[in-house]
Amino acid sequence: MARLGLFWGILLASITIAAGIVSLSDPTSAWPAVIGCCALLLVAALVAPQHCQGWLSPAALFVLAGVAYTLPTALTIALQGVLLDSRLVADDRVVRGAGLALVAWGSAVVGFIPRLGKRNSPPGVGHAGVGQEAAFSVGIAATCQVIAGLLLVGIFVLQAGGLGAIASAGYGERFQLMEGKGMYLLGLQSIGVGGTIAYAVAAKGGPRAFRLATAIAFAALFVWTSAVASRSALVHALIALIVVHQGLRGRIPKAILVGIGSVGLAAGLLVGVLRAGIDLRGVEASILLAGVNPANAEFGAPLPTIGDVMDLVPKEEHFRLGETAVGALGTVVPGWIWPERPGGAGAWYVERLYPDFADIGGAYAFSPVAEAYLNFGVLGVVLGFLLVGFSVGSLQEWSREPRLPLSRLVLLAVATPWILLFPRLDLATFVKGFCVLTVAQAVSTFVFARLLRSALNFASRRAAVPT
Image (cartoon, rainbow, N blue to C red; front, side, top):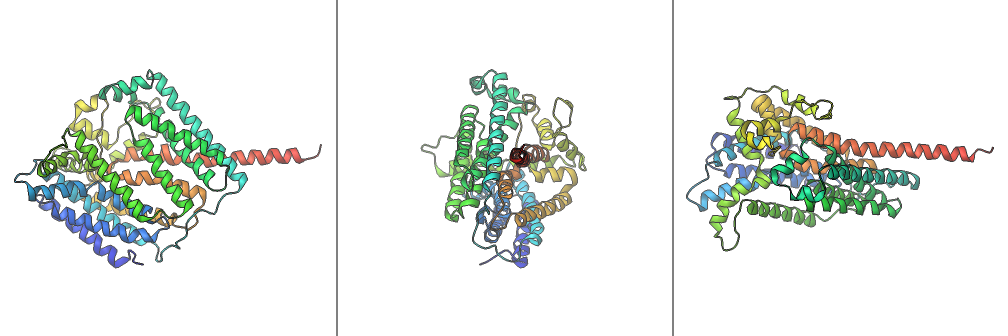
């Protein structure tokens, strides 16, 4: 079976980086960016078989995420140049953003090649199972986490005047209701992580009654998504559930996974078209093609962001030299302890270019590529993504065992949605959302389960001692 060896990895990474450099030097055509994305698709196709999770491998998903946030916009602009006489004014900025993104992802490929295993994993998957006693304690801990999350979200909803008040609030009012209140974010992640762990326990080795906790968790997330039109928590939990299911039940056929991804891509573009106010009925193909370009913000929002930062730095703004990392670390500290804590790069971006939107608590998707450039320029992008690629490759090796332990499978599952979102995050959002709200909660659940099991064992030993 073909795999991503040193030769193919370096070759495809070189093509990707070269396409990015061409796009940066000559942004009048988007075809080099399209070619670079195709090279990345080949990387993903060669990486996927080297992991027991197949197309859900961390390295393959990381590459596919980069393509998903780049290819739709680049291809739209390229076809637009063929079918239409004029190009949108913002196209050059977007193409340069795509070029720097390709340099970043090509560097990441170089970074994770040394960490990939020399042999493919065995085809079998599924964790080794957990004992009944361990499964019970983990399931209880996960159920408690779901209940705690429901309480946190419920308190926030009551403070905001009820779910109806949040749903009926305007765009700006809703931002103001949620701004600075991390309680509901913590609660939503608790519900999603707890529900995922409860499903894993019930599906392999534990009482099936814990599936009730999963059902309650996803029902609550669905209600929240329907009322507030904030889909992130539900999507995160669904992706994590798919990863857990595949790890427990065996590989999901890649045709199904590719089909799910294609439907998601098409749905995202459709949402973008509708947000742009385009009437799909009776629209000519060329007009629709022109309209899809700004609507690609559903997937391509980081590209104009990268172009904006490249226009500002260093002409109007100085390089931050790591300053945004301080803002990222500040997100760990609660706002009531550090009210004036610095914001991250995403906060700087919206305050700098969209101050009116920032005043109502709004935000735009940022980009790790833009943040690396903001701090250290192009060299920072290359070196930073070499490190990111090495980290992704390390995660791939750490999680490629054909029979993953339950705790490792859960951590892989809750990390997967953040791999897909990585192209539109800044460091502050990543630290707060991934490290604090997600991974820390999953780890705390297993720690609580271990303490609970130890307490039960101690109690049973005490009861067995004759008086």
